[in-house]
Length: 118
Length: 278
Image (tube, rainbow over all chains, first blue to last red; front, side, top):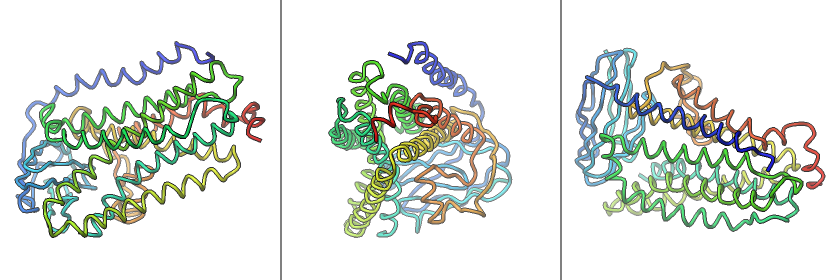
């Protein structure tokens, strides 16, 4: 074989090393404020979320509908499926002050909301 | 509901269709270059699609459990894992693919290439397919929505698959070397897109740190526009990418760009290939 083993192992190291470092970072989230967002009847409650600017926030999304929904926001670069009667967590920010709309991709007509960073 | 179903299903299908097309283009080009001497058969694609469909069903069933893993960020971790495995398979493919039977162990290599292709297509169908199944399954529980969503989904899937077919024939009808180069550029973008998604997912899960937004092109090409949607599905366009996403995207491109396959096809004298292809 013209492709040597060492090249493979070098590549493997390149891929795996950053991954092994990830574990450590995950523990770093200490006292992150949490906000609850409820999905019911294809609506978000509350539809307006105020969060402190320039601070990371944990958003717990609880779906009280039997149908799945996908939380999506282009402005926040966030996208996540929440199964029926399911619960998920996403982290947003730190955000510059401003408004960041989000919506439910499965029911975009009704499921609308906005994050306001102050 | 109808239009929403078209867009949603199209978006998911496009990503998988693009990857499948590019893999099929490579199969065709390898056949040309190898003069069909080796083992790589078109049938790999059926394995990929069937196993991918099965996998998508299983993944959709397991999503409630997966969601609660790692303190409710399981989806991000599993999806990022799927991307990392796919990227690894892409890397193996571009590093072992033989370009002529002058290369050592061409049979073993082409078998490995087939397996990589099955894995790549399978995993992309698992990810995109499970989301479509979730959406369709959820909507089907509401009788009013069933018909518009079903037809919307079929039309979305139709457009997605047609785009893939157009892309395939568009590329394979080019001159062999141009076709190879086009497919490789697409592969670079696919790898970059996938790597950038890993960065986004793991940042969303707080497994990777926050990095500042590098640019804001939302006035130029809004992600909500049709063109923005298309660019997102094809090359992973983000109007406000983070530094980490940009770095990962670049790393994905480099991963394919440094491969022997890329370098040999891009260099001006890939002698064996040109001889066999002409």
